[in-house]
Length: 342
Image (cartoon, rainbow, N blue to C red; front, side, top):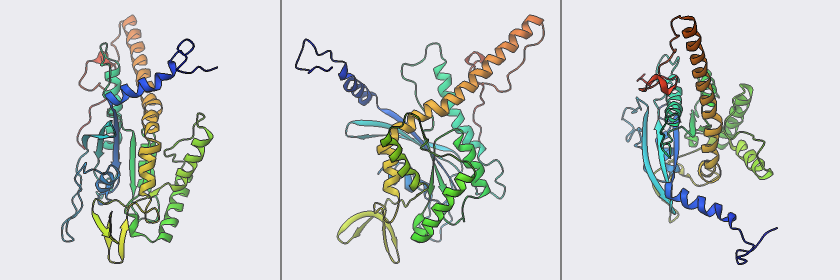
């Protein structure tokens, strides 16, 4: 049974809840945090600038052929506020050092995993405060763009190890960087090989299947999984082609238009991240990855307190926590170490 808003006696008005939520949402805005992982020289900065149509982070690429490749040497978050049609987003892009730049890459993923967990721990610490903020600042990582080298023959052992670790703590979106370095046939074969190897190693990337998915969701997600890994080309350069200005990359044989779906999956990746699954990325981070971290931490706190109580009852020395909380008294209970420079 439904009533018209014009029928003032029978119309209750709770259907305006979406309008009320929208007004509050537009007023407050939201956070979206993306981390970039991959080798140096894969065009990570250029791609992220292309996706958001803004110069968010400076590229480390060479400006001339004779220049030495510049590299990101430490984890560096950059935050900017963007607004589009009245919707405001506080966007944080976290660039990371190229993980395979060293001769010995053992444990090279540790600083990245630790940074992601640091953000979970910081959120949990704010959440557990007796007088916590009405709106908790959210620095948790919502998406990880993982850049695959198009020159490799598939997933290397290092890729497999890093991907397994990352998928445990965040939403991973695999990307074939600089896909214009391959022919269409090579690109198709490479994507097929990566799909097979992800399945073989049981590496599950975003989007995940859910019992809450509608038939429309399942069809959309199936089409996205067909595209993964996204073979992309990014560019901030505007080039004139047949009298039209396009963003693309100039080659000796012609121009790659990053918006041309026959040239690149760039449009599909942008639409996936921002137009169809942005809310899901944020929600899954909170309900899946953060919840797993939170449950683990609270369980450790409970066990520690039980051990301390047992030790106090027997007159023995109380057990010490294996890890200290970040710049906070023990009462905060977050079993976590602050990040140190690798």
